[in-house]
Amino acid sequence: MRNLVVDSPLHQKQTPGMIAARPPYLFLSSGPDILVFQTPRLDSPVEVTGPIVVRLWVSSSAPGTDITVKLLDIFIHPATITRRAIT
Image 1: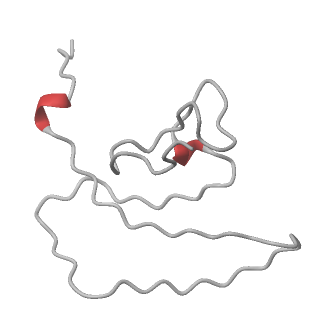
Image 2: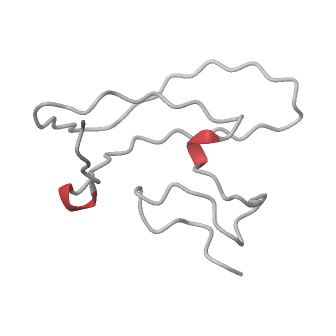
């Protein structure tokens, strides 16, 4: 069996072998069943210390529902940013 856990938070994309993944292997956040809250790029460092608590109220008619909550610290290395001239 293949490892179903992606390599890192930077690799939030479907890949061949993942359950229910189909070409064109989109980013996980683009799925119709995914809700993403994302802040703009932060101007200064932020420290999050201690337990993270999520309070969620859900109603579903499905016989079984799986819910996953993730807190991701996305770091974009400056060398990976594509720069282009604005004319």
